[in-house]
Length: 97
Image 1 (cartoon, helix red, strand yellow):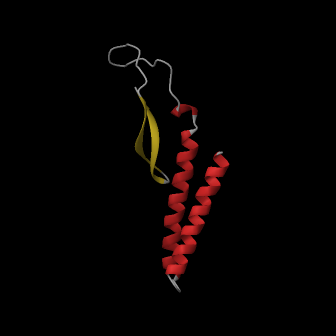
Image 2 (cartoon, rainbow, N blue to C red; image 1 turned 45 degrees about the vertical axis):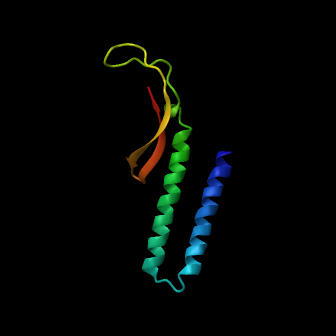
Image 3 (cartoon, rainbow, N blue to C red; image 1 turned 30 degrees about the horizontal axis):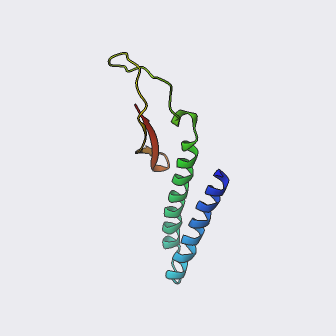
């Protein structure tokens, strides 16, 4: 399933590039590079988010201890959050307690 999602993301990037090329007749090298860099950023951020979503560290932890009161914390589910990475800003789901 992950492969299918990644292939779909790649296909969408290719389609976006082809659409851009059709709309921008005879672009110069700088314009091509700018578009490719933007599409690359979008693609790699999406791949990173997909890989992170399956990491064990993103799964709920059983009864972590509250650093303030020492009691067991209750899992409240995941919420999206933004993190800065070397690939740029990523949106990932983070567990909240």
